[in-house]
Image (tube, rainbow over all chains, first blue to last red; front, top):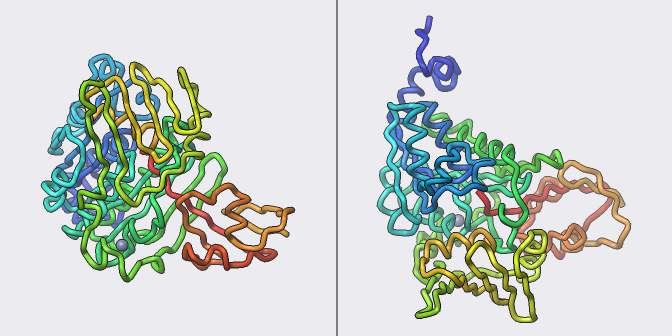
Length: 341
Length: 67
Ligand SMILES: [Zn+2]
């Protein structure tokens, strides 16, 4: 007979058991991004008893987050509390035994190389592909499994990348989407978030407890509103000449591939240019923007301009973007990912 | 012609010959996506060669970035 303790129901679940629970409690998980996906997965993992969780996020809590980012409160909005701090406070109240390492930073190459070698698994909870491709290559370099997860509207998609086994994100994506379909343009309902996280966290529990034969191995996608569920066997997409997972050149860690930002002198403006290999679809971007109610929207054959809060955003045909009204690169990047994706 | 896309029946009235045509019809052409055609994953370069025929089953998954 099992003694009732906080983990007893999880230990009763046969594939985990006492041994699995011990593995979970000795593990270290990195969650990159503490928005909707990161809030939910961190709460599940803290409740499950993960030993150490590192949270990485560059942002602070805003009112529009509260509809789905379950760790945050109105007080966090009022205080503009950084997401990693607000999350840590809440998570420690849920489980004081888990060690929470809160890193208020943009997840770049350096930041990830400093932590990935120490962790057992990485959860992708970011909102952009620039960071995902860096995660992809850092995880290949240090041989760490990571779990892609993303969602917009009622649609979600997830895939577990295992170095030297499965294809990597670079293998299965023929180009990087940048069509402007983001949570800020087409919206999101919270059940979509929870379903992606349900898949991601289950995969993490399998990995941490050594149940690798139970891993999905498939690219999983769904549309909750359209009642669709898709599972694709993508092993055949492993590219024998993939620079990330086969040749180990890690192109996404290279400076040329990364998003470029520059503060334009004396103009209170930040310029953002995507890294090479990005195809920007101006027409799709325009179409998605039109679904949103933007202030002072203007378009001409060369560019689109609109206002959001105190900022004016100008997007040129090739995707080059100017954010007027700030000299702060982090603030400008945040707006860029919200609208350009 | 009737086909099945992501588990749903779809009646095609227009002339659609290839997977590329189908993606255009579904307004998915520029998306970053993966197409499974009768349980075989297609490579990108097969999209304009693979023929769509009566009763075909497609699973189409596209990548999104939000989170
Ligand atoms: Zn690869």
